[in-house]
Image (cartoon, rainbow, N blue to C red; front, side, top):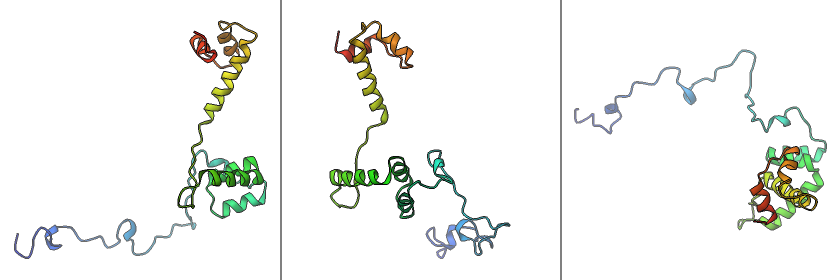
Length: 157
């Protein structure tokens, strides 16, 4: 290597010249696709219910147009605009971050609610059945449970 061609010099790096057309973002002229195809929309499975669907309430459509996350738009559409705004304001007052711009809240998975309801059902069944009968009854409801779980829920040993 000569003094002019050191390892850190551009000449010394030994990179081939860029192709005339360029690659990736270095294209000189954007190529036009026949038929005028535009941006390809790619949706996840949970976003697909929104495709081609307009909200029942035009105010919810305004939330979407204003840039509210599609997840919140689905929730707003499911519970109704007015109830969504009440929930949003309440959550803002309870979970506001120090910067006052965003709210952060932890919402347990809905499986927790299902577990609570299952446990209440088991406690109700225990008023009319023995703990040993409960697993069979729960199996009929499509909620299999073991006898030790029943005892734990009922607080019995």
